[in-house]
Length: 332
Image 1: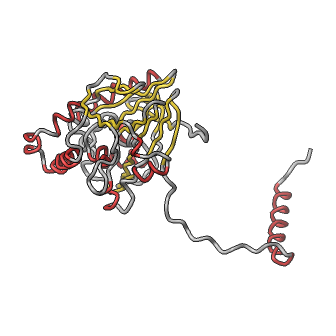
Image 2: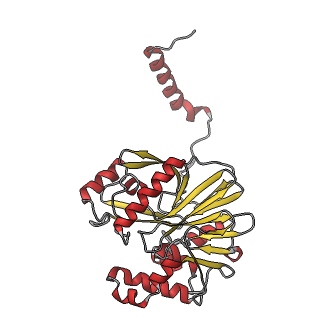
Image 3: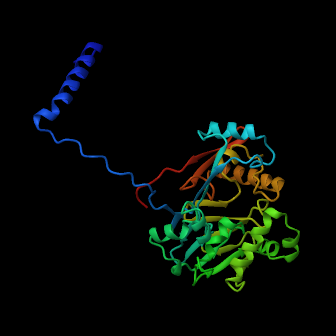
């Protein structure tokens, strides 16, 4: 058997270099000029099966920005930076992805949350509010959506309910909303007492649902909203925040909406309260309870603010949780 030693390797390298130098002299094809950079990303959608149901993740883009001092309300910024660096992220910066899903149950086409909407798409020059463009790229037509299920009323979940003209974006869909969310965000007393940071969201809620003539179907937790889609109350992030369990055959996935924000901060550190959590203590209790269940049941999670395509497995890891992205499949 031939064995290679250091002298053989160096000789081979020298011969290769000589051959490269002679190549232009022996009629080989010269290198072409470099192609210009494309400068934009591919359409953002990903598809997988849960039993007989087809799930399409339709990204709305992502918001990069500086790490605010209060991004984690109950942790020091230096500790948050350590967590970012441990996850191979830049310190003092945080990027928040937005990933709604559409579910084809075989009988109905159902959108669950709708992204930030056309106005934010224009303001961000396409970095966010990509949902409807990516929906089309995924071969899905908003006119064919039978039902839109909303998890909660923050702007990155309801903005895509209306188009650039302020008209309903899902012209033929029934709109389902959590009863507790509707009660809180449509209460004029709550709107008048809201801190400055929430007043804009109250105004958006009014704009979005006025465009629909306030025609919505309200739902509670623990209800089957469509075959294989069951609501689960996960309050804390907002007063009526709701997650959804998709189940078909032997397969199940938890659509957790905003039980956590980015996982390398809030799954790794479930005791941290994101600045967006309206009741930080309740949000933490919900997060720990749900993630304990996900780990014990080995249930996949589809998380709105995980990196695209935002589907993962969860396991306990010390005082927190480790998330492992589900493997990408080239076929459905």
